Length: 119
Image (cartoon, rainbow, N blue to C red):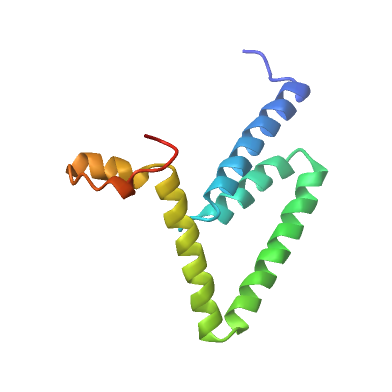
């Protein structure tokens, strides 16, 4: 069995890490591990690329700052941020026709549940 060349390994890590970062960024506004996936992708990239090590360190620092700032805020601000994230999530699911699919499965025939982009 042939060894993978250094160049091929770097390309494989770049593509894999890049895809993981992209998927993580898509997941960020939704409840779940979006930032964890982004950081995992950067960690994959950081095994071969110096820029990724710097981005990973910078990202962790900014994430920690954001978390510390949010926890220091009044409960009303924390709830407002939670509501904003929920609104973004619900709107995106609606625009991607997630509620329309559910409507079709349940046969409720509620027209406004369907995305205006997917008819």
